[in-house]
Amino acid sequence: MPSASEKQRNYIFYLRNKFGSKEKTPEKDKWIWNSEWEKIESIRKEEVQNIELLAGAEIEKEHYNTYCMIKEYFEKTGELISEEDLYQSIAIDHINESENKKNTLYYSMLSIMENLMELGITREDIINKFGLVRRDK
Image 1 (cartoon, rainbow, N blue to C red):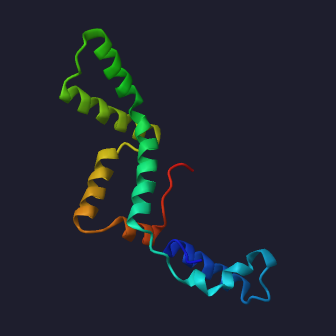
Image 2: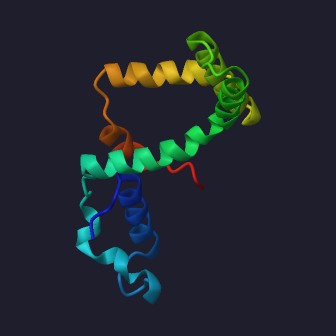
């Protein structure tokens, strides 16, 4: 089975170096000597998009307060909130979330991410360099 990322591949080489040989490797870790692990499996675009969608849908639940505010406003008035109020409410959700994580730079970090994308750095580049980031852990 190929490695899923450069990080995973490096870990396998670390373990190989630690044990020195297949003979000195504990039985449960002997899989690290399979040469297939030296290859890096390129993740298909559809798989990445599916992972992103699942992670994104879970993450965007942070906008629950905005959803409740819209619902309440609509029930009272029969109208939608203004477009500007919607955007401000979402921005407040993001700022509150980042402050809860001791990080008040949400929009600065978002800007950096968008700049990287404009430079042509792809998801695959990030995944291959740092491994697949999972926010559910």
